Image (cartoon, rainbow, N blue to C red):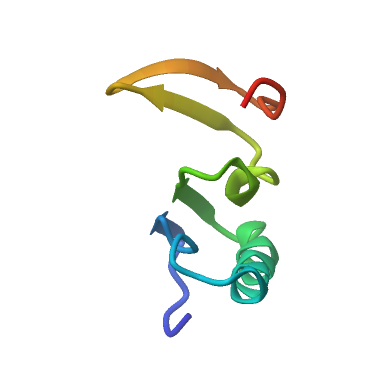
Length: 73
């Protein structure tokens, strides 16, 4: 990151990356997440598996909210 924002918003930040590049980006996100608020928009659950809080949206509506939603998706 060029700047040091207190809030970081990532919209499909890893969607077009190969597996190795995705892992590098995920590692960087995990390193900086403790120092700021991070909002991640993603289709792949693996992208948000380390999140403190997850909201699942289907057809424009929030259908599930919680800390551990890994099962069932």
